[in-house]
Image (tube, rainbow, N blue to C red; front, side, top):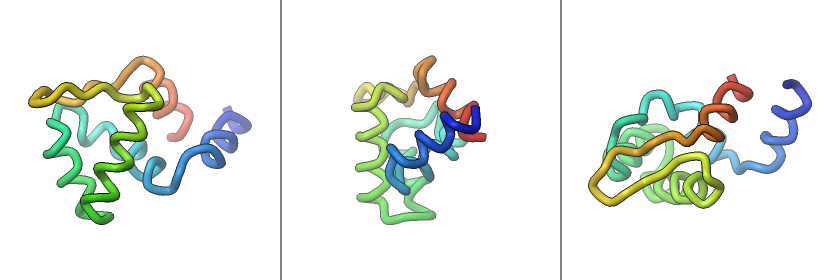
Length: 82
């Protein structure tokens, strides 16, 4: 678990790591609401970019107007990062 965490920290951006650490808080929110919530700790545009990257990497799924869903892979990554 320790080696995997180091690998993830090196392969994900600082903003992506911040977003991953708060996935539990934004789960169930729409993309816009989640980016506003994350935007309290970083610029909202950076929060949106980080969430888009997490979508591209298969850690979360977003459908316009629907709540963000954390994928099984995303759940595993969250578990490793805690």
